[in-house]
Image 1 (tube, rainbow, N blue to C red):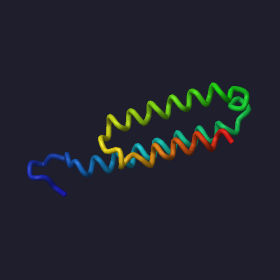
Image 2 (image 1 turned 90 degrees about the horizontal axis):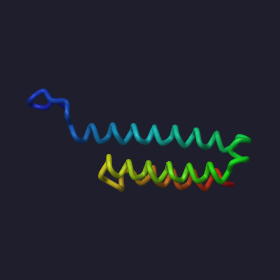
Image 3 (image 1 turned 120 degrees about the vertical axis):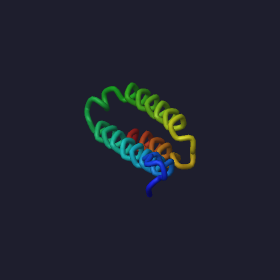
Image 4 (image 1 turned 90 degrees about the vertical axis):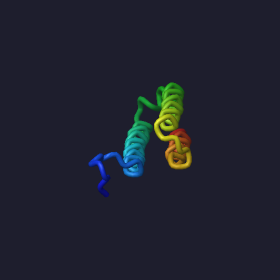
Length: 90
């Protein structure tokens, strides 16, 4: 796909790349949190960690809404964040 003026800006391409980047970034963070939930430090400071994780999830969702204006595209990330916070408690 070559534009007429040699510009590399293609909105669909950049939207797809940002979607893949944010998905991989979120999966990495969720994996780190999931592994942390099995540690003794997490069990000793459960409520502190839960409050910090909830704040991080809310901030990340707000950031994604600012960056990507389409809520439907990023809904799976918000869903994964909500499911992760429920899984690590139990």
